Length: 141
Image (cartoon, rainbow, N blue to C red; front, top):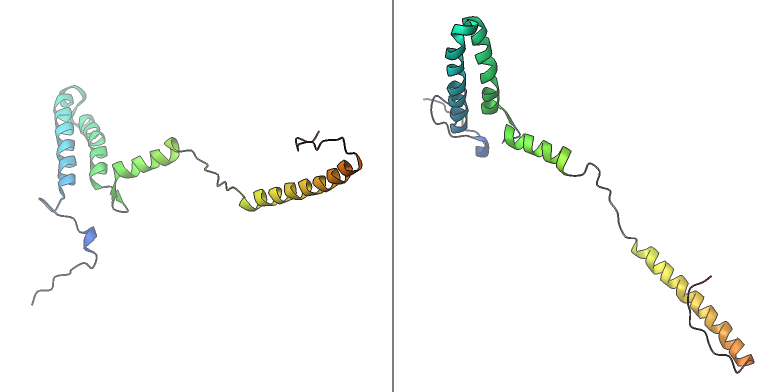
């Protein structure tokens, strides 16, 4: 009986279109051929067959790279976009700043205690001098 391995994680399985290649790979390989072969044919007479073949291969290599590269399930364009976004578009340092709620509460408590002490002093001072008015609290100088 024939044995067929079935992968456990079916999300990584890609649909093969032709020649055991995905549609994306077929598109990039056809682009490589569409660019490289005419370049070779045009430069073969001028530069010679060896030099134009080497130049054709160097022109086709980026297309092969784009067709085959994949990291963490993402193609090269998405990986490059993420790198560009992280390095150049967003700020490199994002400091984590919080507002300390308890420091604000402590300063309010201190202000209330200071106001309470002033009220007691001014009340005793106003009782001794009946003609004086209570001053509104303001900035300390």
